[in-house]
Length: 144
Image (tube, rainbow, N blue to C red; front, side):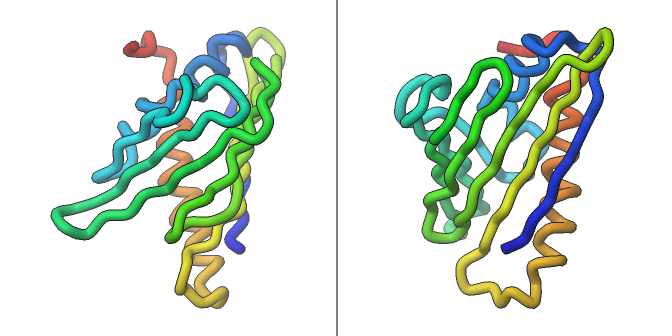
């Protein structure tokens, strides 16, 4: 599995950072050709399912993620249950000084891709999800 961890500090208070990290549709704002939404539940409870749908023309795949642990406003664990992407992600937020610290950690496996490519997958994921995390924690007001 490809592993990566991203950590960002933000001037936002922890509850605000948490609200942005769990604003699921905004996750797709910085991932090309991807839309993200809660498809079962509100995306705020254990058992809810978040779906990232990526595609261009007829080539597309779904990345369904079930929330398996949620301690608001500190931890959200998502199990990736798709045919293409498997693994899990954890989003954590904690108060840090006058602001907060957010940590995004993932282990992911791309079906059919040899493990030899795990470092490449981790590097690409670090880049893409780093952009997402930076976007989510940007200090401009969140769009609802």
